[in-house]
Amino acid sequence: MPGITEIALGTAPIFGGALLGVAAGQLRGPDFRGQLKADLDLLDRLPPGETARRAALQDSIDQRIDDLVQANKRSRQLRAAASSYQGNWRDIVLFLAAVLFTVVWWNIPHSRTNWLVTFILMIVVSVVTAMYAFRGTARGLSRLLHRS
Image (cartoon, rainbow, N blue to C red; front, side, top):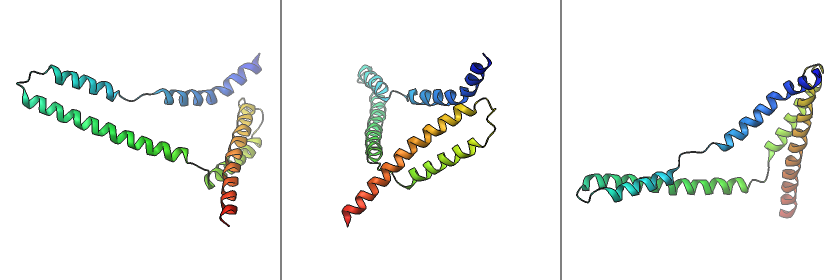
């Protein structure tokens, strides 16, 4: 079974990178809404006689609400920009880089433990980037033809 262990050891960096990507997607920031609820609850519990503290806490709450509104607006702008992405020259450059890396990887000695797994992965990456590059090129050409 040394072949299976070599494949497992060869795929470890690829799966490690995938797991790191999954972990990065699962990270959450602080819960600002929960903090706001706690601050509002604290504001309700403060005695009415402590006007200076109540005013300071109210200012803090107002600033957090303004920050939340601005963050929501920025998030919507980023989401709109990401959804309107049509593809451009960077897709073609990425495709060429993936193909060139695949060609370079072909010339590395095939006896390396992770050679086959990386080669297959590079073929898949090349196909995916080719689809994106073709889609962007087709859209660009159709826009160019519709303008004229």
